[in-house]
Length: 436
Figure 1 (cartoon, rainbow, N blue to C red):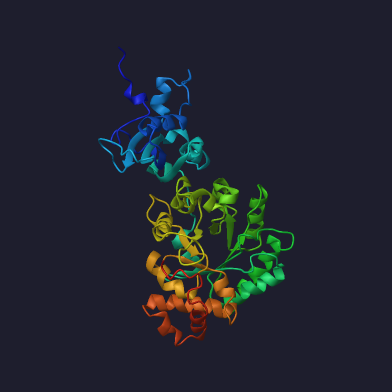
Figure 2: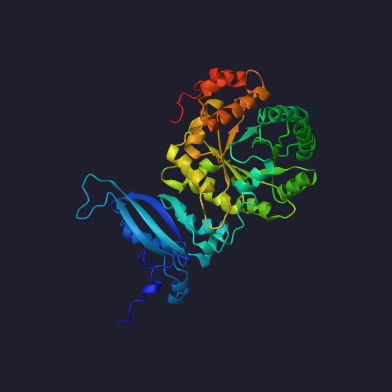
């Protein structure tokens, strides 16, 4: 009887793989109790590495030893040991599969094809997390500026930064947009971004916006002594997205933004690695919910909104906050931020930007939940202030300063009319309760 070739099997002990050579995927699955998941899991590993649903001649033991993925854990919840109760209809498991890094190398498209490709259609299966070896992450440049670089550009050492999304979202010419930009900048916004819905339409072209907005930025700086990053939305088809970005930088734009999931991670990475586009990049989260929102399908939010865009080079990433208009669990919100800025081998930290219905009243909670190394994003909370956008931005800056000083907003509002009006205007706009 031939000796069993253990190294070619699609299974291994968790202690039996070299973690420097494998990317480990963790999955949540739920299947009818009639399906033997412990036997199904190796089939999933083979499907996503060397083989298919039936053995093929080219899948030799030599090929498998080097390239087959290996199931290193199948854990049922609850952990039945001696019988499955008759009333159980579906059984839930956490599965871990180790994928040879050599199969795809330091890139995201083939990583995704490998770890959540065909098996994304295998019923109730969700990718919960990925553990990367250092050699894989070393293949990525990551953010060029990140938290320290953007703080240096703006000369802001410690406090949270304030971002404004120009509102309305779209439908206006550059001559209208520049006045909205100017007012938000005068109020103290550190960063001003186009809305994700406005990129390069015929009625408000990138070139026209950059020329007008950057002249306004210069004028505001002369008046206030504070610079403003303008992240112009360059999202487009290839190669126009790169032409938009290069032209914007040529015209003096000091930052760009891209809807990175709509264009794809390779576009974000190419923008970050282009030496002619040497400005911070803000990544916007459009399409993210289609990937992470289902509890049984897709990819967890901290990968879609955190680790992947950081690898690809985003300096700032917008993601939804649970206090505003987005339905987000607090622990998920905080985990996205951790994946953006906690140590990840040698990558610079990316600025987490909480957004989605944020008002000045929410500032202490955001800082409490994420810390001060954040960008606070607000659109309507600035432009809809009863006293106008200048007052709206000032109210946020007053709330930020009070929070950094350890003062209550109510106490600070006694000295600042803008903050007082904001607190009276937006008591609890979404009926959730702050921090819920």
